[in-house]
Image (cartoon, rainbow over all chains, first blue to last red; front, side, top):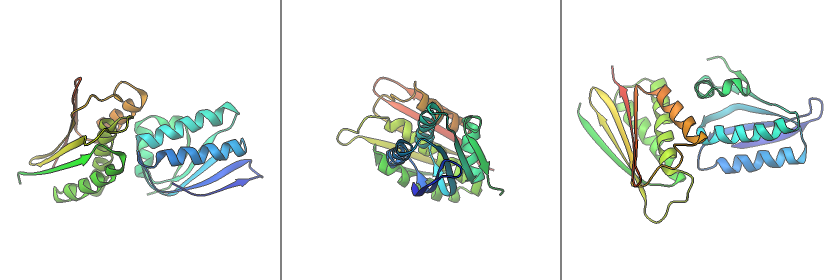
Length: 106
Length: 123
């Protein structure tokens, strides 16, 4: 879920720290939070997944829908510090080609 | 070992976590390694997501899950309702994930029932 979010003027990006589990139960909360941020300021979105432990397909679906919004104003989404076992889910689903991913070493 | 564990949850998003925790315990007892356990938790959760679907559960609808530990770990999930997600993009994501992470996946969906079977070989 969204732990913290701040706007970085230098890079024109929202820096969003995710934590815990993103799953079918709480995924709408994530969607609402991210939509609020990009409505406030159309900017790139950098998701820090250092403390993210799990994401399911509904979470991936929300990230894809947010990416469509971000792309509509020419922005991009970067996901940083992904744990390898979570990065694996992005690879399996082909979403590693859709998002810009930075995976932490094992 | 030839053991069977049965679990029934309300067909609601809030109970998927319960299933993931149960899978961790059962897969550990079946002797799977840490990576396989994580994969299996993800797969079974995706099965639940498919069966829960997008509509609010009406009344007392449940998802029945059985775990059979033998030469392989066989997990069967079923619900007495048609799976509406299967034909869409969200369903495709779930099926891709499941097919990549366990040895075999069988999905059977009819008008009034849907069943998902996941098989993981045990060494």
